[in-house]
Amino acid sequence: MIKGFLLAFDVILIAIFLIGMIFGVKTKETVMGLLSGAIAFIITLNSLFILYS
Figure: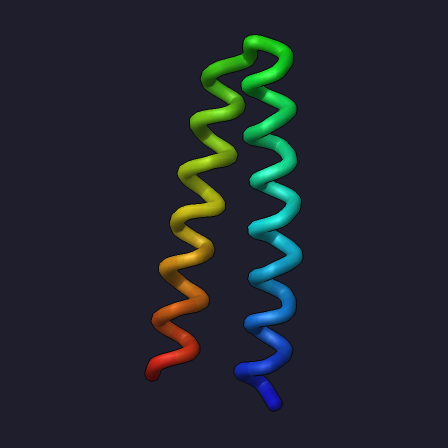
């Protein structure tokens, strides 16, 4: 139950930050794009750790 909720929450956060990364690349805000991409990557690693623990 808790794992399912955390994974759903992580998927929503990943989507938000990937949209931010795409928006940052399109508006030439490379720092914002890289930051959003790095945060999405960290959240992905976190959700994989939760899933397999």
